[in-house]
Image (cartoon, rainbow, N blue to C red; front, side, top):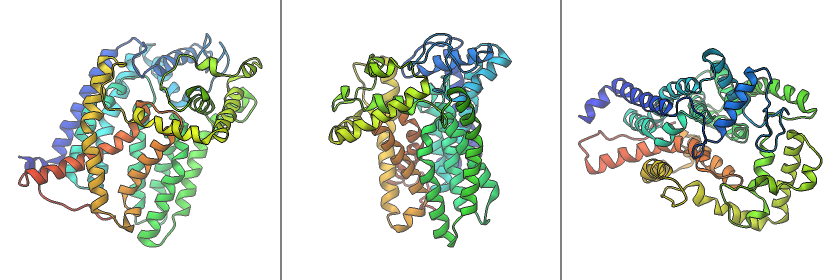
Length: 437
């Protein structure tokens, strides 16, 4: 039966995608037109209110004092311009009904997330692994939960998968240079950065891998492609940088959140034990800074300086603090501090599939362990997972910040489950080797 499924992968993939969309649409309908604080989703309240303000003609401002310490009617760049514009645009078309952008993004990511997982899994391993990865992605409760939230996560995760896949295609391209894929990659990376500027830290490594893979493949450095990718990203970010300069009278590349997050994440108040959610963030900001009535951008830059000073003043404490984030970031067990929904989601998604993720990674490394691994797409995926994890262990570790890594590891989970099926029911699926790259 399983072999028959493999012989009809398009049909199987179609069923998986339909299931994926159905589950995410149910989630969107369940949340409906109310925008309330649910576990891990406070940001959607901000995006909803900011979109309403834009459509009322007030621009990127809030009518009352807002997180983090933004004054009423003062300009804010703390939130993604791109996602706010998306919500505002849908409200403009269908009225201020949150269910509309929820449903639209549920359908979009419900189609694309499992499809991209399938493409990547098929390219690195084989068609069956791609189908298993797509199925895991379709039913992953965290993805279903966040697909309906008015937050950047759904599109952000989807675009990361797309950018990784396009990077693989560019690495195998016969064209020198391949302008089409370079433009596509630049556009995807630009969108990712506009959703979450943190990804700027990942882009150089992703492009370096691309250059290395192309060089090892045909002894040619894709410099023209890399430059074109960079030009596209700059062209997409520059308008917002210019807008920020006009609003704040200072250079702000994109968003004003890095300083706040880095300051709070490494504050001495934590000691050596990180606490994911506190209720005294404002109180941690030095009074001498608050008394200066700095705007959001100026305060963000000052807090970044203080955050960096925390590291130089006591690097030993920062190392211990970062290590304390590991169990928070990788938490898969139920907790008495969490409600039932959070515990079920955590255990039935990450907790259930983590063994397959770990086994799949181990297997992929063991079977392909050599210097050639460095130019294989396996290395690209694992490099992303390690870098992304490292960034958050050094700054802010929340479970939802791990979800892009989960999206990648689900592909390895598909490989792990496939191998186990071969070992215990060998007649079920045909054997295969990792495709060379």
